Image (cartoon, rainbow, N blue to C red; front, side, top):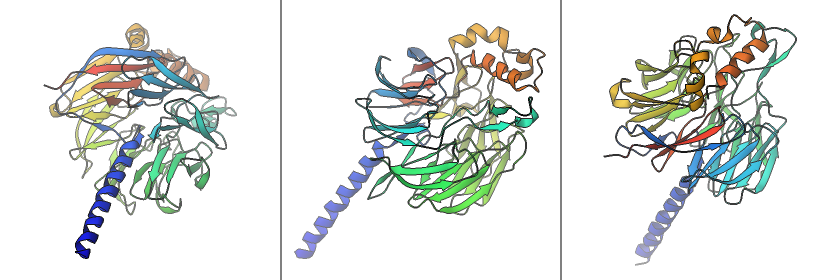
Length: 445
């Protein structure tokens, strides 16, 4: 009888701890580690539900939970927006552009700003809980980048859109917030207090978002090195170096992990599949001189990822890296795709947002342009395609200032580098036109 009673106690203990763990997991939400959403059929975009205007470009990616959408803007504010109406609930002011996306855990949102701080803010009130000071956040910069003129000018990389998004590591004792910094460190801080637990130093800026798998954190940096660290101690387990060459150095994409394989893209320009335990190469895909800034999503043994200069959404075999098909957009695909059922959603740099039927091998799709794209496409695009040389209009592209002018022209289109998020049959994404968009999806039959 005593043995049965003990067994019964153990049974209820296991049920309780299992449920507690499951509930804790549901409380953690991140813009890059949650890329697959509920759904079955092909669900194209229907009508605009609402759009919310900020006063700056939106490069960060939204998340939604409990009726609220969270997003940061280049105007220096972090916003909480009502999911149904698009009306603001609150906004939190920082002293720099908010290019970091957000993680959410236990009614706290975590994000970073170019003012040099990472913040923890109460989701219900918008009040600051703590802030952590890094040694400074900035766009990745080099003197005389890629040989551009003037050779003595410190130049910000015009394609460095993001700051690292904090992620949450939970064990049975504590919760850590882990994020990269422009100062070259990966930081792990206490989720409740914001106090430093450990840091790991690299050679240069870390703007990618780390990814967790079991007790390992994976990330890459502008030094072109991909790292695997122990989550609890910050000690290096292994590292893998991509190629370093002018114009093709750095890792901006976040990794994706599936079946013991870690996938990530780089500027060098390849998509890599590494053994998650050892860091050994399983395969690598040549992206044809296209950077991969998009974070991969894996579904049904297929890796989906965007490319820059080939304007493609790639579908690759997850085991071999062999290309199954590609879908061509109208500009750079930096947005990380979202998948719901048999539909994949992503935006491009020309201001188009796409939905694509995954069962059609890239043949069935729909396009939603931003209003600005419709307005400016004829004067900026070349046959409806992004074309840097065409937009430059015979300008000297060895000049950094002229390159920046072209990028500013492209931004007029409402470039989409924000990654979409789906909640309650509505898809949300940001744009360089300053809007957070909410579109209804077709209801499943």
